[in-house]
Image (cartoon, rainbow, N blue to C red; front, top):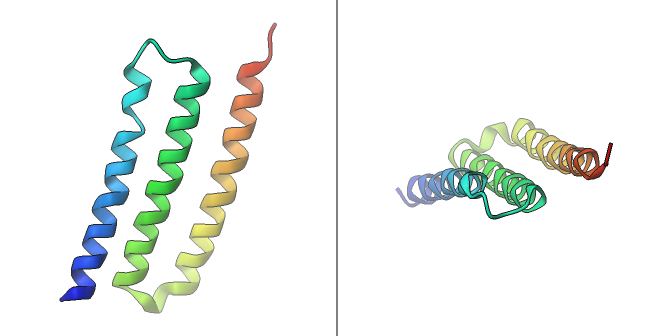
Length: 91
């Protein structure tokens, strides 16, 4: 029962981060860099917390979840760097 509670709590916190990261997009006062940073960080943290919650729930799939977590961390870092670099260019 405790494992199930911790798993669901971690999943809900991850979903909260996903939702929380989208709110700055609606605000017109912030720059595109602030919006991009907030969105990528909250998406990365939320996704990793969801993977952690799944790891707690089904530990027999730890190799698959570990590969997913590493791939997610690398992909989000690289894609946010590329998007930030592209949006910084002036035509």
